[in-house]
Length: 485
Image 1: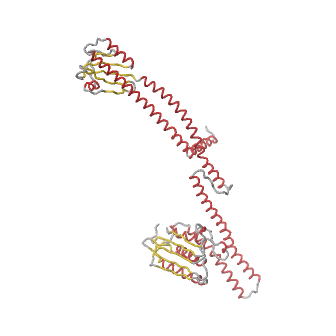
Image 2: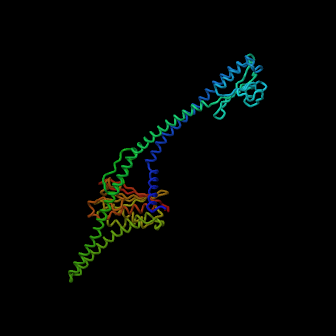
Image 3: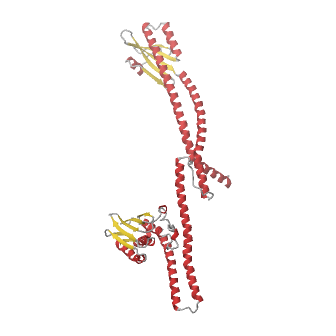
């Protein structure tokens, strides 16, 4: 019985084997072996097979030529009628012995005149090959891999009439022996070359896989926090592309992480500041037991403003959480988008008037769409509030609405400070704030655009931004008229 430690050892060994079989190193090794071994085997097989076919062809041609000469002598000595010639008999025996074969002489009555094996003399041989030879068709075929069988006609010199047939069988043992020697030599050669190819494939797969092992090690160091350098593996085009894309992701993660840390700091400060102010105001009132009513009213008004400020931060956080919920929680209904935008502008115009900012809605046609009015209203409000908040004195905010048969389009354009080009890829990330230098002057938590993007995406829409520093910003939204679940 296996102990538990033994079982774990076997399982661990199996995992190592499976991991290796799935590795790029093993697959490169396999490809290199196939690329080396398969062509060698094909070439060896082709050479040996070509030698066999060529040797058989040459042997058959030689025997056939000798038999034609012999058939002419048979006619000259009238051997078919008088087989007593010792000269011809000796030549038949010599030829059959030389090729380690058998020669049968058959006359036009299919009677065997001579058999070098001496087995069927005087008997009749009626076979397909003999009949075809009497009709003028020579046959030459390989019987298994042991013999070459052929028929050669015996023809009269004057009339060219076929008066007999030579039925010849020639052994291929000598050819097969030579082929066996060649095969043995080829196997030795293949074995040596196979070992060399295996060694070369192992070394090459090791060196080819080194950049990937380096990449894994570097990634492990980065993941464990032991290295803050970018990934730089430029051995191959692929590793260079992977390194470049990985560095992009890491840089984005670092920016996002910095933004999150800054957000935590900002939100902590923002949440703490109203509480501190309220505590100071409350302590001041408590310290003045006989404070006048006017002072109470002033302090309570300040406390109410701080509560409103706290409430706005918490509301933004809760809104973002709601946006993360599934689309099943949407309250989809037909909504007049024109009225929705007019209502939002009506709410924001008093705030814009403080900076003398003109807010205009340009509607090209009436638009009714299936949307969640609450979430979409929050998205539009965030965009328009930002357009006012980050605008300049005596500026403008231009909102346009258009539609086609599938989508409606909303643009929010302003004459504000603009967004730097390097920040355009990050402004929709949570907690990211572009104008860090004015973060204390301009209220906000860096969640507005993240909330806006989530609201648009949950409606299966799209949002994009174009901006130039000092010239203004344009947000373009495209949302389906009919909600697709």
